[in-house]
Image 1 (cartoon, rainbow, N blue to C red):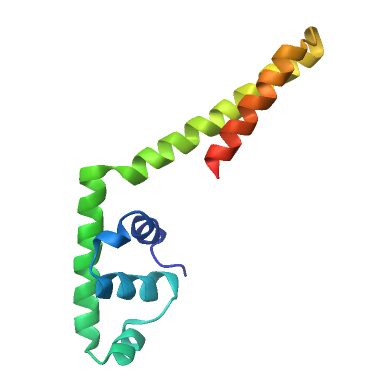
Image 2: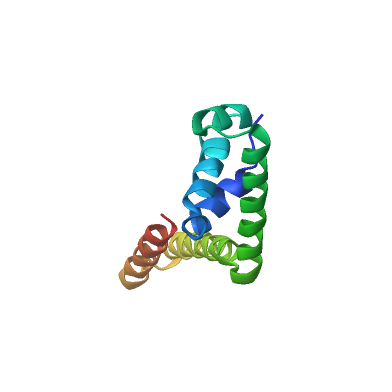
Length: 120
C-alpha cells in the first residue's frame, strides 16, 4: 500500500525549508519506502525519535502549504493549461471542418505547444 503521496508532493515544494534531517527522514520514509525502524537503525536513534521528527516535519509542510498555497496554485495552473489545450484542439478541429484558416491553425498549434511546454 502506498504511503501518503500528498507528503511527497509537499516535500517537493517545501522540502528545502525543513532541516536536513527532517528532509532525509521524510524522503527515506515516503520516497524510499523505508520503515521507521530501518531509518532509526541507519542514523542511530530510536524509532520513536524518527517518528517524532517525521510528524513535526509533516506538520510544518502542511502549515507551509496553508500559508503559501504553492501546491494548490500549481494544480490550478496545470488544470487551466490542460483546459486551454483541450479548447485549442476543439478550435483546430472546428477550423479543419469549416473554414480551414491557416492563421487559426497556426495559432492553435502554437497555443497547444506553449501550454504543453508549461505543463511539463
